Length: 227
Image (cartoon, rainbow, N blue to C red; front, top):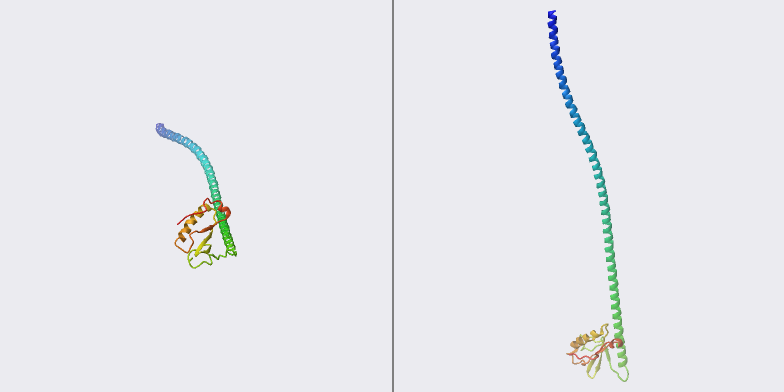
């Protein structure tokens, strides 16, 4: 009995020791479980926050993409509008250039027509003057010889008056004159004609300018003394 009791007590002590170790292990496991539970709770909270943050960031990203798409669309619209304006400006500049060229051509044609008309009127006036002078000179009571600028005597080497008549050993010069500004034109012609003829003794000292009646009425002075 004693041996059995001793053996049982020994086993009991051993079991008690094992039970103590098991209790210690349980406490340790419980502690680790509690730590893991705390970590799990923390991780769950962080996961929830991360999910919330992710949703927020995804929403912001979507809004940013929408904003970027709107900006890109607006930029494309503005670029197209700019290109259209440039095209319109180029078209307007071309139209303006064409219009300027058209006006320039019309002005040139008008000036050419005016010049042509002035030349025609001048030639008509000159031919009328020569015709009337010939008519007068050929009258039997007068009988002067009229030279036009194609049949001038040799003394007129460089000078080309419209018509001359030999009278008492000197040549009387007749020049047909016509201008739209007769008041300034005649005084200028007086000076230039006097400079050309002043040193030629064969030319009579009075030169006659023949102008149309309507222009003659505009002249306040009909006689000029020069050189």
